[in-house]
Image 1 (cartoon, rainbow, N blue to C red):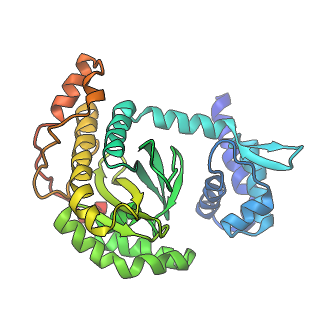
Image 2: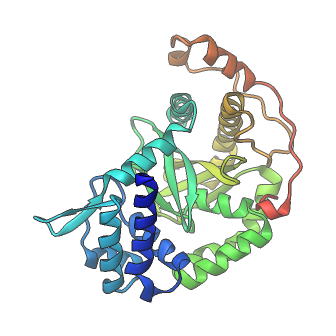
Length: 328
C-alpha cells in the first residue's frame, strides 16, 4: 500500500504542479521532452538550456524539472545550478535494455560488417523525430562518424531516418511528416521531397541510401526491420566517408552485406525470443555471406549460440501485414 500511495501521490503531484499547462497528456509529453534533452548520463543542463532545446517557456521547464527531480528522474546539482539524469531514469533504462537478448552477438555482427567495409554500423530505434543507437560497431580506421550507444540522430537528415519513414505505412508516415512540419519545419523540408522515392526504392530493393544530408563528408545506407515487440520499425545503418564510397559504390558494394546483416540480426533475435524482429521488406530470403571473419572462427561459442547461429541460416518467408500497424 505504501508504494501504491507513493505512486498515486507522484502522479497527483505531476498533474497539480502543472495544471495550468493543459491536460495530463500534454504534461507527460512535455516531461519526456525535457528528459530527451539529456544525451548521456553525464549531461548537465540548466533550465534555460533545457528551455532552448525543448522550445518550452522557462517557467514551464522550471515546474517540470522540479517535479521530475522529486520523482527521481532528474537530480539537481546545487553547485552547478543544473540538472542531470537521476537514478530512477537510469534504473528504468537499464531494466528496459536488459530485455533485449543477445546484444553481444548483435554487436559482433555489426562489428564484422564495420571492419569489412569499413565504417560505422548502428542498430537504432525511433524516438519521435530522431533515432537512438542501441548498439554499434566501428572500424578502427573509420573517420568522420563517432556515434555510440545512446546517441541520437536526426530522422530527416540520415539514411536511417529515411529508411524508417519510408518503411512506414503511407498514412502513418504522412502523419509523422505533418507533425514534423509543425514542430521542426526545417527537418521536414529535407524529408518531404525524398519520401516517395524512398518508399518506392525500399519496396524494390529493401534499403535506402542518403548521401551528404547529415554531412557532406558522410554517405549512408540503411535497412529497416519490422519489430513485433515494439510494433514499429528498427533500422540497421552504416555511415561511410563519401570520398571513399560514392552513391554508386554504396549500391554495388555496401547494399548486399547490409541486407545480409539485416537477415542475420533478424534471425538471431527471432531464434532467441520467437519472432521479435523480422525483415518483411525482402522479396526473397538473402543467403548469409559464406566467408566468415577469421577472428570469429577462433571464438569459442556455447551450444545455445551455435543453435541460434544455425537458425539465422533458415529461409523465412514474408508475413502478411495490417496497414493499421504502420507496416507496409
